[in-house]
Length: 130
Image 1 (cartoon, rainbow, N blue to C red):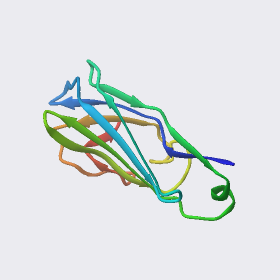
Image 2: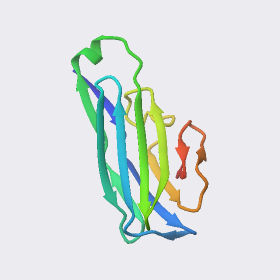
Image 3: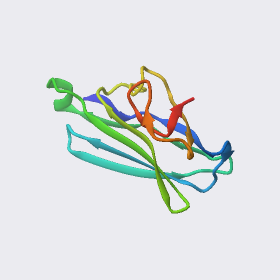
């Protein structure tokens, strides 16, 4: 059975005008097309605005044998003060650990005042790689 990383470990901080945002809810979601699986979890930012999630791993006997195009839709949504912010949106097309953006660890800085946009590496949102 092949190990497949659906969402690599991710950590980061949420800022508003350069200041940490404690108590924000960061919701992580994935939609894995191969197994038709949807998963969610959440974290609350600490005093320094920091959050973290461990990696999400799955295994599949058939997935290790049959050729297929990996497609995992990933998202991070930040909720604070009654507003929701698109932090991270990406369609991951591999099962590699840290395979989201050129093998780089997912350490993010999310600025609530930023305008969501597309970033180098193909992801979209208000978060940027540190």
